[in-house]
Picture 1 (cartoon, helix red, strand yellow):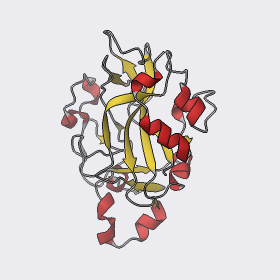
Picture 2 (cartoon, helix red, strand yellow):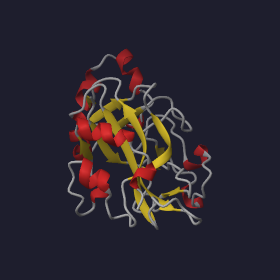
Picture 3 (cartoon, rainbow, N blue to C red):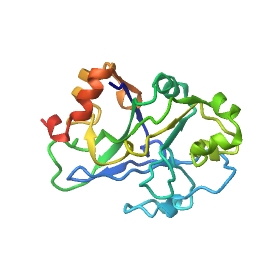
Picture 4 (tube, rainbow, N blue to C red):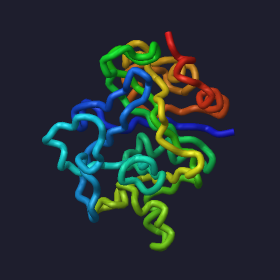
Length: 235
């Protein structure tokens, strides 16, 4: 059995100033955050992603920090994720090959007749996952690898920075990783209200800004979570 950690990713109201949309049927758009550090090789811009959402003109030429990377997403080559922040790197580093990383984002509800499990204005939703192909590696371990053994992570956003800064790197199993077609809600009616995935299955209290924190799930909770459908979490 596998354990899981869920971490917040993607565009938000702080960076770059808006959230990706979730549509009435539960489909959504994953929008990465801007790249904030100098890079040593070209990376795509928001314009290059050619997303079916309106991006402010002021951001179109801004390079993106395309992390996590999903093969099915524009300009991605592998299932990888890296993080330089100890608050995320710490929990992720405790996982092992075969464990699951869930990626969740805050998304804004698009006008229409949304499914009953979609929050009224915005909410937190799982948008994708990796089943780890190998144990996580630390930044120090990555830098000590021979050049040829770094290949699985060569396209990761942290490896494209002029100064490599990841504290942890993850590689997803290509057969068991991906960007989901439909989101899975972590919020209730209001975005800040956690649902039972957070309060009943994760080790988090659900108090305060839980939607910014890593959420940890033991083996039994992970099995139950992965069997849920959005309809199981409706009002």
